[in-house]
Amino acid sequence: MRLLKTILFTSIIAAFCASCSDTKIISTEGFLEINGSEIYYKTMGEGDPLIIVHGGPVLDHSYLLPHLAALAEDYQLIFYDQRATGRSSIEVAPATMSLDGFVEDIEVLRQQLDLGKINLLGHSWGGLIAMKYALKHDDNLNHLILSNAMAPSTIDWQEESKAVAQKITKEDQNKRNNLTSSGLLRTEDPSAAIEEMMMLSYRAHMFDKANMDKLKLFIPKDFMLRSQLYSSLNPDLESYDLYAELINVKTPTLIIFGEIEPAVSLHAKRMAASFPDAELYVVSASGHFPFIEANKDYIQHIKSFIGQ
Image (cartoon, one colour):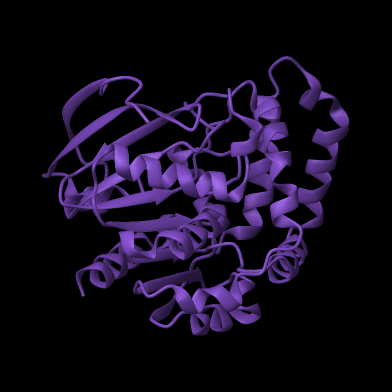
């Protein structure tokens, strides 16, 4: 694989968070050609590399910032937009739209940026990709962090999804239904309506609904078209089960969930017990986005884990 474009620019920027306001963070960004797609990436900081795998599917890395910026004080953070998301190209080869394809994107990214052994953090949907990466490329990892990850099996994922759906208030569900029937999703630019629908859904994931204004989503004009590409993942997601395989992941693993997430009572302990070297950490007063609701606790625990 070749570097598609040289780094767009290298700059020194002030870190976003108050705790590192006096720290200057080196940041670079650019595009890589990976498996036939232009993949956007952004790095922040210096030190041991920590690749961040965002959630979704179809979201991009931007909702994780500025919340993870404090990690750039100690590590080189590598964010990237998964294929057909964010600033990455919508042109994709159908064969690459699979869990294995997303895993190989991380590996090619690691190789092209010459990162050596890496730390890997996957949030939500990205946590499932990170698990699959660890199963195939365990030798390339120093630490694995599964933050609010999708469950290791379809059955547990579906059970958790049902529990989350039950937490959506009747008022918010009515608003979602009204948006669906309004025709706004079929307009030339449905991005505002899609964002509103997502924010209504994510309210059920927050410990404190007042924190919703800290969650910033980027919804491109062609979001619906990009979303359609992800239907290729259906065969991978309809019957997966990784539990029996996770014993093969020797990398030290940190599993994080927010206090109110159904996963805490449904499968988090089983998930942690499936790894030979895993720690389960439940973040108090938070839900699916602990880096927003309990940022200091979240960041400190990750730094402590990687620093062990």
